[in-house]
Length: 208
Ligand code: TZP
Ligand code: MG
Image (cartoon, protein in one colour):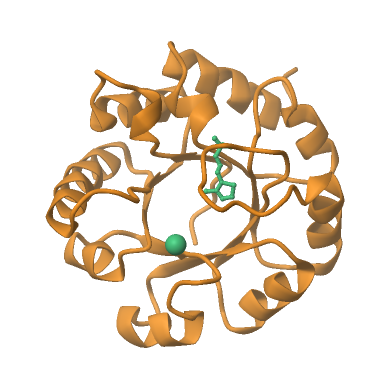
C-alpha cells in the first residue's frame, strides 16, 4: 500500500456545528495522508452518504480513504480499504468479499492478535489503545508504549499507534518506535485542525 504516517479518523461528536468533510479537508491540508470514516451511530444510508463525500475529497487530495466496519459501503464507494476490529468479520472472510486489492486494516491489542493479522494477510494493523481514551466504547485497558515496542520488534507489516495520542504525549509513542500515528479527538476536536496536523507532521518528520 501507499506510504502514510498521519492517520485521521472521523469523530463527529468532537466537532458539533462543523461538517465532517470540511474538518477532514483541514486535516489533509495540514498533513493527514490517510482518512478513516468511523461512524458507529448512523444508518447505513447516512454512512454511505458520508463515505461518498469523503471518497470525493480524498480523491481530490490523493490521500488514502478507509471505511470502518462497513465492507459493503467501502466497496460501493470504491474506498481504498476497510478497517476491522477483533469482533468484526474475520480477515479471511472479509478478503473473500473485497478481493485482493482492497487494503484491510485490523485493530490489535495483543501481540497474538497482531501475529494472526499479519499471517492472515492484513495490510496494516492498529496497535492500541496506547493511552486511556474515551473516544471508543468498550475500549480495552491501555496497552502502553510497551506494546508499541513489542509490535515494532516482532511485526513486519505497517502498524499505526492509536488511543489517547495527543501532541503532548506523541513523542513517547514515536520514541517507542511508531512511525505512524492515528487519532480521533486530538484532530477532530481541535479548534484549528490544520495547524494541529501540521504540528503532528513536524513531529513525525523529526522536526521538534
Ligand atoms: N481504537 C483504539 S483506541 C480508539 C480506537 C478507535 C480511539 C482513539 O481515539 P482518540 O480520541 O484518538 O483517543
Ligand atoms: Mg469495527
